[in-house]
Length: 175
Image (cartoon, rainbow, N blue to C red):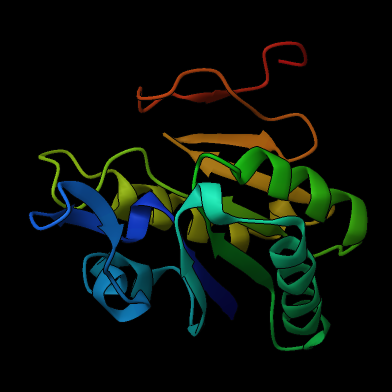
């Protein structure tokens, strides 16, 4: 079984005509309804931790997230953990969790570069890929990972190298 910890980010956003901006609006259930293939990957349990845009993630939020992640990982029935996250601070949170969590179980952060209001929302595909990585026995022992745009990246070295491209994340110095 894998746990899905939802924290918000672009993956949870849609365009709000009243403000003219993308706003967190989708619940975990709303997002999961867009990923029916997830059922074939693993049994899942879901927790709605927060619904924040990436820039609103603070060090205090990261500490609280680390404590919740540790609680999920301590459960013997949990094989891996997926955390949805805003891309503006996903690299900082991934590095932080890499430092404070020491699980053998996979911890996979995932987000999206486009909202559900955009024609090519990448959230469902990224979430499905993240769940596959978290459920895979071969992912054990690698620490915190970031899965975006069909790439698996180490959380301790991932960088956002573009502000809008679907391939925004890389590990340019480490391959």
